[in-house]
Length: 69
Image (cartoon, rainbow, N blue to C red):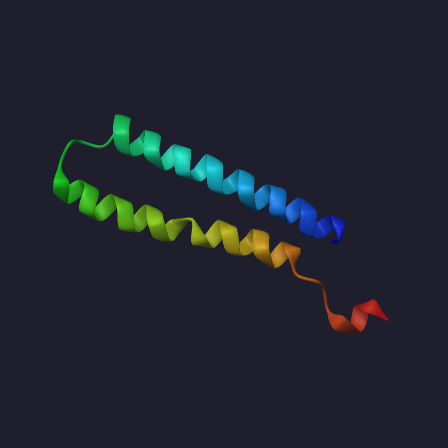
């Protein structure tokens, strides 16, 4: 494994843990106790993590194949 992949893996796992705890704390302590709010909150939060995760995964990809020569 390259160091870039190891760093990306650590960043990805750390991000997932922090994001899930932040979403949980937000849902428990800030959101009102309402089913409709929950119905909107969880799908939105469930989709939003993808965008930062894509940046981390793109960072882990090797560069341009012509650069490796």
